[in-house]
Length: 197
Image (cartoon, rainbow, N blue to C red; front, top):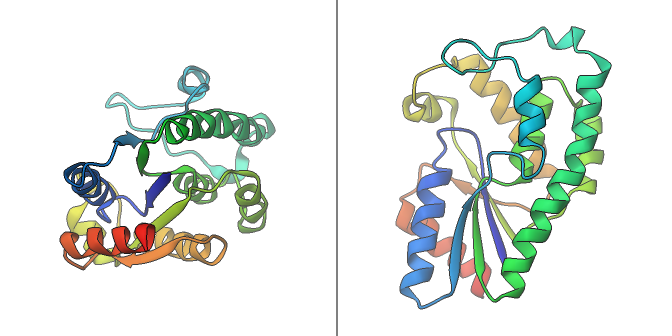
């Protein structure tokens, strides 16, 4: 079984995924925790074309002037997503409960945010990528994520735009929304209830 935890940076994905992993371990489940933030096969290619500053942060680009080849790279990521998914499914077939901190949905949000996909093409992209067996989306207010975000690299306007993209994601998937303002223990219990009942 594959369980995914999605949501904006600072919404509590890593905290929830980690606590869910520990709770499942305590119940004697065969469980594995996987953080999906990098590409599975294509990471070396993307490292080569990604522009970063001296601190290693991605350089902000004018997304309206994005080269066609950069937009086409998104299409190649579908192959990478399926390769990664097959690995996750193999673990699942080996009777592991796979808890994913982030999922391919989060990457789709990033593509929309950075101009690689429009809202319309994102809906098509979402139909082409595999679903987790159980997916949860942490919804947080812009203020919450600003407080939790490490480094304070984004402003409130950025987070409001991101929240809107995640709201569209929720409308186009079978993800279960979770309010990130709730106690983590309660969120873990809700996840377990959805998965096992």
